[in-house]
Image (cartoon, rainbow, N blue to C red; front, side, top):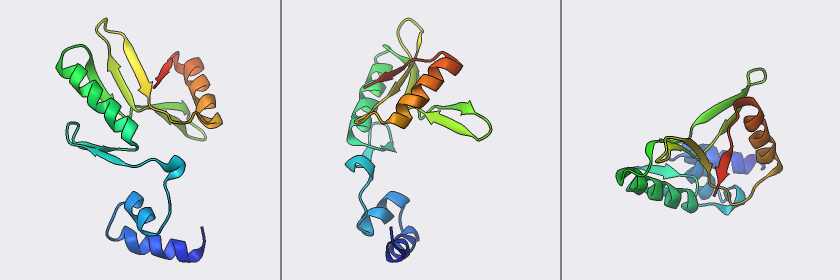
Length: 129
């Protein structure tokens, strides 16, 4: 990213979100995802797949098959330096078991390390969809 890109993004930020500013400046999102707004969930998601899964989970919650649906739950892996893992969803299934779910198009090395760290520190297995 050069100085002219930064100038374009700063100018666009006065009007838009960072995502829109990057688009206006001609920068693509990492892994080519498209931020998507869901009318059903009344929020924006990082990708079309994440928005689609969120809508499925909202319908399951309305049907009573899951409860306590949360978006973007954050887990602290280390305090100094502060390292966190943010999943896409957390909910309870029909048996009352907590499920943590993440929608991934590509599983990076950093994500694999954080998932292993989360399992060791908190005992949480993340469902990757």
